[in-house]
Image (cartoon, rainbow, N blue to C red; front, side, top):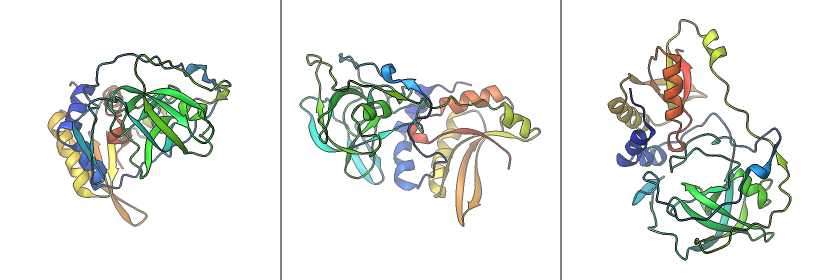
Length: 286
């Protein structure tokens, strides 16, 4: 079975799955975003080298819709400048796929933007303290009112905005002729999110039970159904919707399986670990 990321990303954008999930559902993630814990030197956040890069084949649809609003992706970032509110994202998405297909590293100097082409480079200046740095845009977002850019944890840390959570910033496009620079002198220490544990303990606790990969849980049945139909056409495994009632409300869980091999389940969960889909995980029969 070929669970290629390229194929799945093509599915998401070509059939409007990105649109339907975000505009028609209230997704309830199990994990809250947060700053990392543990100690690691921020020297891992290497300065960005501005170069001419080819556009990502996945992150640049002509337009897309999220929560009823249509966004039109710019053909280039030339002369872009805008002021507004910046936010940041951290451990919840660390190690997961971005809209570009890359794996998100919260200790790299990257960012998410709703309409700039992927990838491109922008200079972000914290207007509250004057600090600035250059980041590479490789993701989509933030889909929150009045926010214009979502920074990686490392970028936000260097701009001294992690504690507050947001900051007033200026975002400016950067060409290859401009110098990479940052005012951040003391990079300090931060903690790196713990590596995901394996499923050995869970396996031991669920012997004899069917194994599934749960792609998401949605409060609207039609949204879960749309996702299930797309997966059913493209994956050579059963796809089902499992209903559960929590806190007086029904959730519709999209599950692939049963899957006999733990190795296949882990591989499938990793391949489907794309920001637009939510966090897939291995689960067992209720």
